[in-house]
Length: 166
Image (cartoon, rainbow, N blue to C red; front, side):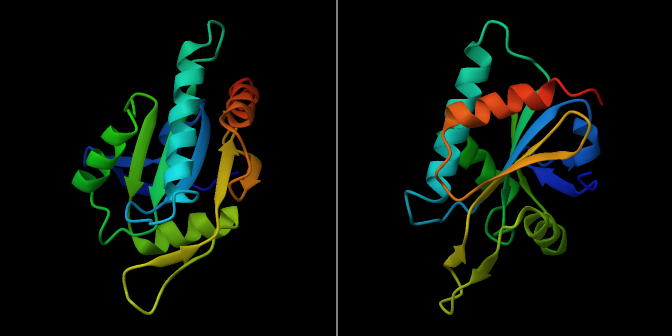
């Protein structure tokens, strides 16, 4: 089971993972200043495509939500995340950008196998990539490593995860 982590979304609202019980979740991790197009921006573009696919599918489940969590909470404040979300046409009804206490962010990233560390310049962050799918019952269904997965693969995983009974 995914623990009940607590964060703040791009609208400044408190969010806990337990409020999504009954919904399939896809969780990815980014920082808005990421300079590498095949890392954080790619994760965000893929989530944008997943959102489009799921909203356009005639028989797609409606019990799903995308979560993008920053691991740069000092810089990525809710207003900054709100602007970033707008760049990717995020619908807050289905896609939240989250920040929070570094201890909680570190705990969930470690659970998903994502590692991050600040470079000596104090600005850039090095990290690997992970995207987790949590089923409607709150259990981690799959962890997609790196940046090799496609939006189609993730959309299929979310559909499967949404069918699990809470």
